[in-house]
Image (tube, rainbow, N blue to C red):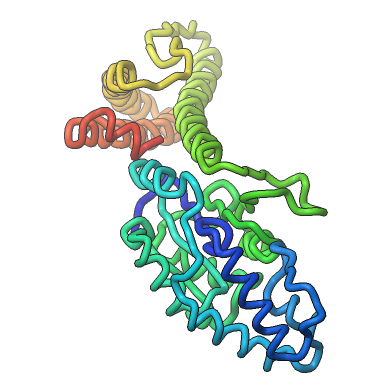
Length: 333
């Protein structure tokens, strides 16, 4: 199982690779073989293969589909090319420990041969094609299967599905993942994120992770403030005067975590957490002696949260020591 900050799943045909010529030739061959030579060999790239076949050939769609598939089998690895920027994008996302997978309606054996042909196997945790699951896209089944090696909760915040068709959008929505369109926007889905270049998509994903990391630290600070407010209320109840001094360097930080600031921020917060844990334990002992069990319950809740945060910070510092600050930033944000 993989512990990753995010999962990004890709469609294959006309997303990561340009197979438009191959598909055009397969359609033309199918039309000729079925006696439809007078029809144009065009297909809306946003339309699923089954929908196209049914609309064009009616009750004979299964026969036409067999002819179409046989052509693709015979023309395997012909007239295909990686879209610009794909490998650089995959390298960047992989270096940030992002969980990567492919979900396609292409015949599974052909799909894996094409992925291997471009030497992309090592980037992906799973490559899922037609017949790997009971249902193809737009069902959520193949996408959920592709994510089985991930420990991430499956939702729009944790899983992005990038594709070029309505089938991909519906698959993402059915799995409760975030659909992102590659290429031209789709009529009726203009409100969805859409990228025509993979460098822009990469920038968006990395920025998203940076913002989420900053939000995690901000949430920790808000939790600390909540503890302080509860403690102040209890002190005031006993006619005391709260005395809180802002010594936390993170609270003065501008929100930009770089290799020059991240370790300093973590170490400063670890020191404060350690002192806070010591103070809370001492205060619990006093409250127990005074039989102030309401305060004991409040302090024990605070202690649990402080200890969890302390161990999380320790783990981050250990990771920085183990892999270096640049690699740490890649894997954490």
